[in-house]
Amino acid sequence: MNTSSRTVVILGAGPSALLVAHAAVRSGLVPHIWSKSGADGHSRKSRIYGCQYLHAEIPDLHVDTTEVDYKVWGKPDVYRDKVYGSEMAGEVSPSYLEGTHQAWDLRAAYDRLWAAYVGQGVGGAITVHSEFGSDGTVGEFTKIYPKSPIISTIPAQYLCNTVGHRFAGQDIWAMGDAPDMGKSIPAELPDNTVICNGLRKGDGPLWYRGSRVFGYGTLEWSGDLRPKDAVKVTKPLSTNCDCWDNRITRMGRYGEWKKGVLTSDVFDQATKLFAEM
Image (cartoon, rainbow, N blue to C red):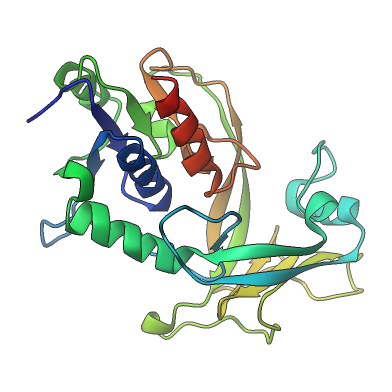
């Protein structure tokens, strides 16, 4: 395996990971993508449920864009309390996204990135299958690639080898459209719209956020106010884990385990890192 100084190691193969690979190739580097394999032994593509989109245009991907109407019912602080509880401080998306903004098709972007870097190996990209874990697996990367930068987009817990490190998160429950699985959300929402429900209990629907962009919808609930078919999702908030920080750069919301990180942020972050190498 070629582990020259022009190699970039990427842990994960989701949208964030492949945006790092895209940034690497555009910077003249060769990405080695380490990902889990499926039952057939091939790379396992991440499934994207419901409403998800990119908040910025990614160079050379050329995917559809649309204008999203971001609405707030009621007050942002009521919305924040519904999602995170009354002890949560800081801004939430209704505080700064209300109005309209552009969105880019994440599914199409991921399809193109997958075809390029996992399917065809553009720019010399290599995909390696591996199970992730802190029990020696991470150390294996550092031995194979002693001089190459390593970037992780996998959940930060996989890098942790210290008992007591904290991974703060907020559990919510969600349902997202998945036409190929025969699943759809139980609400009619206008397309290219995000609604944050900051109304007091009893004044609006039980869900706190409803969204539909590029034809895919999502509903989200907090606490016990949810249908039985909703799936629990943990929203990352913060972590004090610094395991491997001297050797591995974490990117993406789950990679950094940090609130407010957008998928599209990863491309700019990686591009800047590679420019400084």
